[in-house]
Length: 313
Image (cartoon, rainbow, N blue to C red; front, side, top):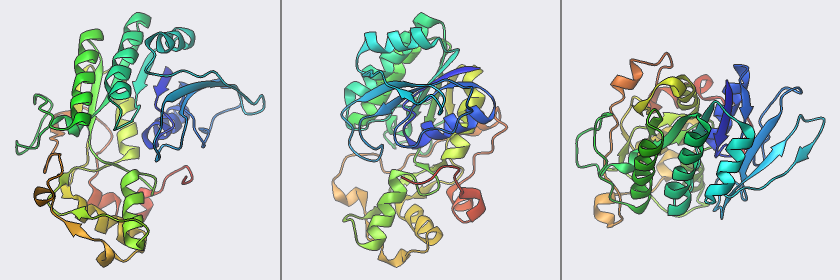
């Protein structure tokens, strides 16, 4: 399979690249600081952020890299630029595109960028996997299965919902993969935040009433690769619905940090926007997967289950 990953400089993108290359797919991968491991005979095209994935990024750009002996050759592309995205897709000629680009504060990257990728996929006749989020839901329902209608209450959720509409309109057989908090090997924004709180290097608190279904990045990446030929909406999240505070405690215990140092708060009383509890029902999607979607209470308490193949930033 010839695969193009958009947004692969991030935690999820790097893991998709790693697993796809291990499966001998021809990968067009995103790149930032950690070049994806690749065989010397494989040409890799990479899109990467201008800054580290955990930091603010002004734009997403792309560069073409040949094998590691030949060195790197760069060509920049802003995914907010529809013509530039179309040009990259036409040049690479992928069979499958995975859009894992992430920029929470930027409507243009999230909504318009998703539309640009979908339009390019449609023009090239490529299959599309669009990674979406549980942020498209308000949390007013007890849980949300794949048939649930988006009802976002934040700008980011609205941008993700708009991107889904564009994807459905442009690529009828696209796979839309909705997920939750992505965790893995200390790499995620959530894990870094917890470490900062536990060590006193960062201010803030963990909500005890903010419920999500964290997923391990390895499970999510494996599921995405399985779903490349499965049109429709899919929910891929962890089996445990837990609060951000409980998640923080699990991370602190895994990392040998003082869990009692983690400040707590209530989102309901904070006045901050956002859903209180979003539980994704993944039963229908799980029935089609060979990948088992583990819960955080499992993958964060069994150290060997949470080891990641790439180094930390």
